[in-house]
Structures are given as C-alpha cells and as structure tokens.
Amino acid sequence: MTRLVAILGYSDGSTPDLHPVCAERLARAVEEAGPDDVILFSGWARGSSASTEADLMAASWTGRGRTRLVDRSSRTTLGNALAVARAAQRVGADEVVLVTSRWHARRARALVRSALGSNARLRVVATDGRLSPHRGAREAGAWLVLPVLAVVAARNR
Image (tube, rainbow, N blue to C red; front, side):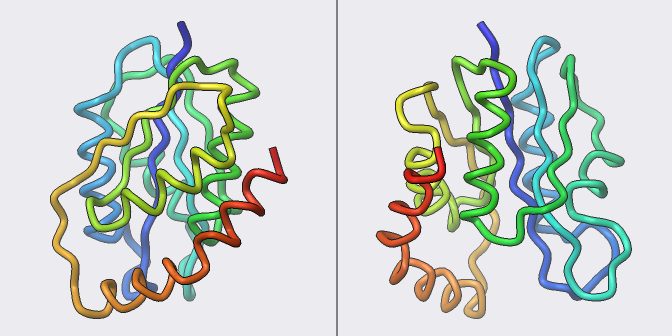
C-alpha cells in the first residue's frame, strides 16, 4: 500500500520565512507521516520571498517518509488539489492524507476529492489553527466559487 501525505502551504506574504499557519500544518504532518510514506509539499512563493512555501516546508521537514516531492507551482487550493491528484497518480497512492488547517479542511477536501476521483482513499487531518477575521472573509468568498472549481478539478483528472 502506498500512502501520500500532502501538506498544503500557506503564506500571506508577511514573511520570507515559513508562515506560522504553514509551520502548524508541517508539524501536524510530521506526527502523521510514517517511514514508507511519500511526502508532498505544495505551495508557491508569495510576495518578495525567494523561496516557495513548498521549499520552506521541505527544508524544515523533520519527519519520516521514503520519498519527498516538491510542488512549487500551486498558487491556490485548486492548484494544490490538482498537484495532489497528479502526485497520487504518479506514485500509485492507495491513500492520500491531506494536511491543512481546520478552517480550510472542508473546502480543500472537496477540491482534492474532485481532482482524485475514486482513485484513492482520502483522509484529512487538520491543525487547530485559529481563523482570523481576514482569513474567514477570504474563506467565505472562496466557498462561493467552490462548485465551479470542483468541476474544473474533476475535468483535469
């Protein structure tokens, strides 16, 4: 059985370092990952940062895993979902463990499930990170376009 542990990046452009939200996700993934797992770090560079979220997570990784994959191109949750589905297909994953924040988990699950189809079992593990008013407003707006993005994810399988 091949298991893919996919960590979704986060940054608001306020720091060139690993954002605390992203660091929480990474710490949760370290708890989850096993020695035979494939680890996917997904996220791009915001603002003036020279390093992508994916690279910062990969450099900070202290967990186990037999293989590490780095997706530097995903700018949105839809991009993350497509990257997760591509990685799962490439490694022949039977199970995908998606690691994100609690406030982001339902939307991320919906998009990753659409992108994966029935090709792998999906489990979401979430951090307890707090939802700020700014993130809450952004998340609410993102739900408005979720049905359209889910169709896009499914068509890109």
